[in-house]
Length: 91
Image (cartoon, rainbow, N blue to C red; front, side):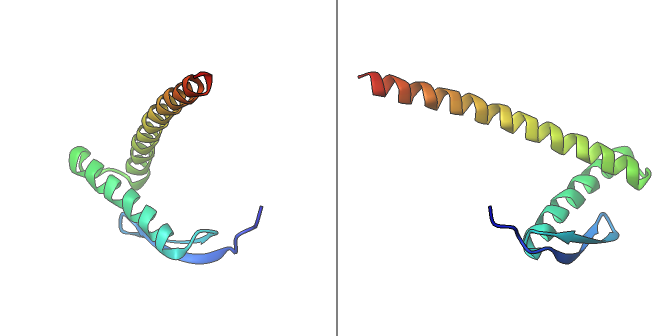
């Protein structure tokens, strides 16, 4: 497996600046930072002015929940596809 080059990236998440090292390209890192920032903005609209850390944890839980639900959908689709392939092999 080829190792990726690590780069310094400056990100702004929910009004705070972060300097990170990433093996992803800068545009991708900024895209996911923007996604997180938007998630945090939506949460802050509903719960008011709270600490950054609390909003970040709630955002992380929301994103993780979405990830688990999507992964479960993928597993169901993958199982169905596997069953269809096996049925076609038997014919």
